[in-house]
Amino acid sequence: MEGDLPVNPSGGLIGCGHAVGATGVMQVGEAALQVTCRAGKRQVKGAKRGLVQGIGGPATSWTFAFIVEG
Image 1 (cartoon, helix red, strand yellow):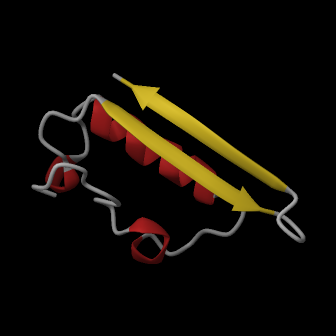
Image 2: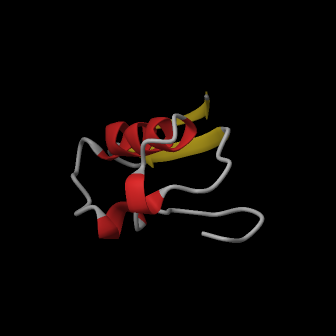
């Protein structure tokens, strides 16, 4: 949380119960909370930008990446 590049302040998929089928939504939601300073105890000080990346589907048939800025 205090480092130069904080990763998974929410605990990642394991910390959030790995909601299969909704993991991307959860990740984008967490990034949005961070850049709008509404992440509560998980807030990364000075967060202005977040990167979300996901991959899934049978035989990894899709992937996505979002950059969220506040």
